Amino acid sequence: MNPTSLSRYTVTAIALHWLLAAALITSFSLGLYMTELPLSPQRLKLYNWHKWAGAVILTLSFVRLMWRLTHRPPVDAAMPGWQRTAAHATHQALYLLFFAVPLVGWAYSSAAGFPLVVFGVLPLPDFVPADKALAEAIQPWHKYLAWTMAVLVLAHIAAALKHQFVDRDGLLSRMWPSRA
Image (cartoon, rainbow, N blue to C red; front, side, top):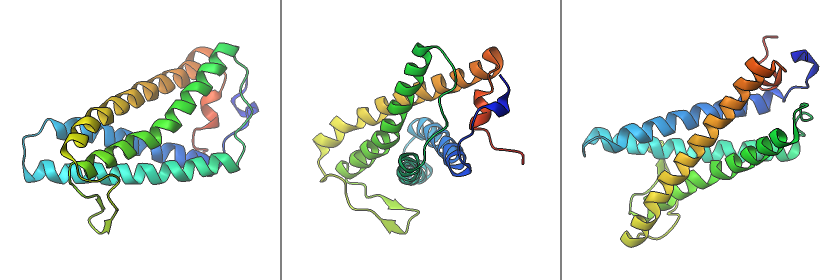
């Protein structure tokens, strides 16, 4: 199939996709790195950056969801039904996790008594009251959800690469930035 025969996502949808992808990869990588550091000013700074990234991801996710709800995506490409079902389920799970991971992180930070001050200037309200037992209960869920999202992102990337290099159906070109 000719890649140009498939309709494309809008420029805004493409930009939001790649911005969110970059933010997710950066935040996940930062989360892995910072948790291994000993307690230090550097570790505290990275935790703040990670929380700021979470706030940005939450905002981008909201904008992306609103865009998606108000702008029809391209028609599904021709593929076996099980692949279409898997793609839709993966996308729905990713959208859910785009919100769940940062909200659970925000809840953990609030419960642990660490306020979220975006970019050091915009204080956000506590998501839940400070409560050490609640913080301990929430903390592993942020990690579990983040790892679940990472696995789904890798599956999404693998499927896109399969379509590009095995099926050669041009599916990837629908979300790739245009050269024009």
